[in-house]
Structures are given as structure tokens and as C-alpha cells.
Image 1 (cartoon, rainbow, N blue to C red):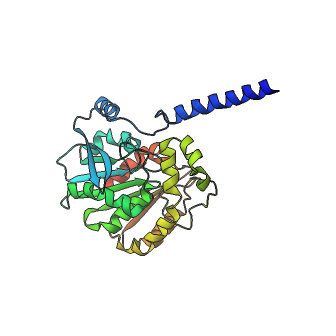
Image 2: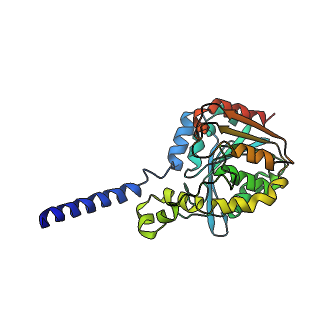
Image 3: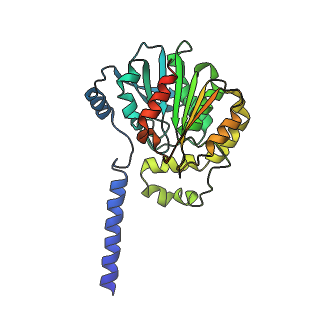
Length: 287
């Protein structure tokens, strides 16, 4: 019996070590290196590729830029987890890049933005992105495109820095505090022993989703500040972020011209599965 117990314990330790190595190896990092991004974009015919890192209050925010010296700027903000490379197909799109500067951001804790170091405050995340808006300036037509948790973040940017935002596209955005699920397991995932076993991207995701309901509640008084055009896109079969978030946004966006597109039989991952539809909506903001 002792030998069997010893073998089982050693087997458990072995698989635990394998999992930890795998979890921290980058396989679940949801990010693509600058080198791989550049190679991918060049293979798609893009030539004007640059990478930048801005600093705000000892936080590094990394982003990829395609193109320069255009009137329009499209800034893509990923969900949770994710990275700038989540939008690689859009950065590769010559139809978009012929008309606009394309910029995709690594949000705090993801990609090359202090990977593994989370930031739960949407207000602070917006403040970290502000220098990127300032870089392009008020003379540009700046359109923010956010998916999932990136949805409320681009809304927060429009609330806090309206002079730098000319349009919003919120894709499957988790914007309603009432519709945020109360997930009992999230605090458990944040226990130090379990957190240590998780890939850094999953840890960051968990730590920003836990306070999300309260962060969305803080935004409630500020929705009236959004006055730029907004387009809400959602799949009616989204099981991660309920489609009813669209109704919430329409109710709150009293001072903004708002359009909606509900995609039939589509889930949460419409950024990739409904590319052409989203591309056409983006192009409508560039006219």
C-alpha cells in the first residue's frame, strides 16, 4: 500500500510540475511577439509596421501600429484574456490600412504591457491609454473598437476623454453591472496557491473580472457624457456576455447617436466569425 501511495504521489507531483511548466511557458499567453506580428503583417502586404510603449504612473502600455499620416485612426482594444494580436486580421486588412492608421493595444497585464501584472480599475486602464489618444491628437478622427471587456473600457475612454474620441464600436461588450454574473469560484482562483498554478494571462483576467461589476456601477453617472456616434454589435447566442447588454447601452446612451447590429445565431467570438460585417461597420465610421 505504501508503494502504491508513493507512486500516486510522485505521479501527481510529476503532472503538477508539467502543468506549471506548460501554464507558464507562453502556450496560454494569448500573445504574439513583435517579431511574429511583424512577419505576419509583412506576409499580408503591410509595410508601415511599428511598435511603441507608453508609460503612465510606472505602467507600460505596449501597442502595435500599422500606417501613419492618415486622417482616421482606428484603435482596437481586446477582451479578457487577450492581447494586441487578437486583432491581427484587422491590422492585416489593406482596405482598413489604406484609409486609417491602425493601432492595437495590449491592455494592462497582457501582451507586452507588464505581462502578468493586473489592473482592475477601468478608470486607471483608461488613464493608461490616454497618452496614445494624445499622441494622435484632436485633429484626427479617432474611432475606438472594443470587444468584450474592451467594450466598457472604450466607453470609459469616451466618458473621460471625449475630446479625443470621435466614434465607438462596442462588440459583445460587457457594459451592464446588473448582467454581470456572480461567479463564486473567482475568489477561490485568486488564492495564492491556485493563482500560482494559473497562466499569467488567466490570473490577470480573473483579477480584473472580479471587480468588474463595481467598476461598471461607477460608470453609471457618466454615460450621458458620451456624445459621439456609437455602434453596438452583439451575437444573439452569446453565452459569455448576454445580448441584453445592448438594451442597457441603448438606454444609457441618451446623448449619442446609436446604431445596433444583432447577429443571428452568433456567439461571443464575432470579432473573428463575423469579420466582414464588422469590417463594413468600421468602414462606415471613416466616411
